[in-house]
Image (cartoon, rainbow, N blue to C red):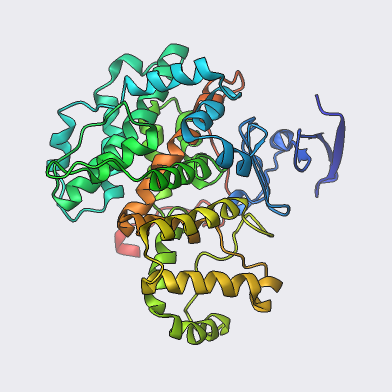
Length: 429
């Protein structure tokens, strides 16, 4: 129940009482649903001032640089937890005890293999196809293989589908990379942890099978954790909108992957790496900083500042330390690309131009550097993002499906086209 209300005076002279709800954290929310009964709708392009749902999963305070999963700070989770534990938290609402975590891992391990016929899907794509194009197709195609868990009204079916998605998306992501490279597919190894297993499926070769470096495993685990969920962004909202129609979970997650593919959403770390490559060497940085400050120059600094975080990106604080650990472990600090990145980082943290505008390095800046250092090509960056975000999408989808108030999404519009008019015969046009 709302504990307060707002009164809106309408142009026709009528007034409408709108309930105002106070969340557990964040800004108060004005419930505008009753406006429809008064023959009015709100207009909010991009939904910048619209709460599309009620959720208990993730909270962001961009002004203060806060990101919480189920109430837990992202920096604490990244420092003291791992991705499977965070996945359990997002799905179930609480951190697991040792027995619950082990059971959760075993449930994931039951589903890491993909149907052998899915190999045939890959053969239908060109070798140079973008991995995200393949991911959209093969994740959506999972619904053709797992008919036994497609009843969204069955809680057990939803659980099984969740485990299948969390377990199989890393396998499919690694297969996308291997297909692109022309390398044989690598089966999952369930004695490894989630992130280690993924890196092994990516880079293991029959001729020299080596376990992934523990430092790189930890870095990948943190990337997964930091990207696991991010409130009602474009791809999550897409998953929820698709799910509101009753679509099966595999189709819903495929729709989220398609939305994430957009360069304004999931392509930020790839754009950041492209920028570093364009700058080329440390000596070129002053020239490019001048270009960035010139409003008439098309060059833009990528990986600094954030649309949501107006102060600093809390995920970047964690990733900064991890980036330096990875570069030191791989002994690639002398690589020109990484020298440019480290110098830009130093400038951004010290230069008044960056500080005054709060253009601090964000998570995309650091994750792009780490993924490149590990040896993952740029066209796989968004696939890694989709892999990590799958657990968030599944959590958001499950939360929505279980609500008693679920309704199919149906946004309204401000129509500015022609009013009704009469048809004109061809000879009179």
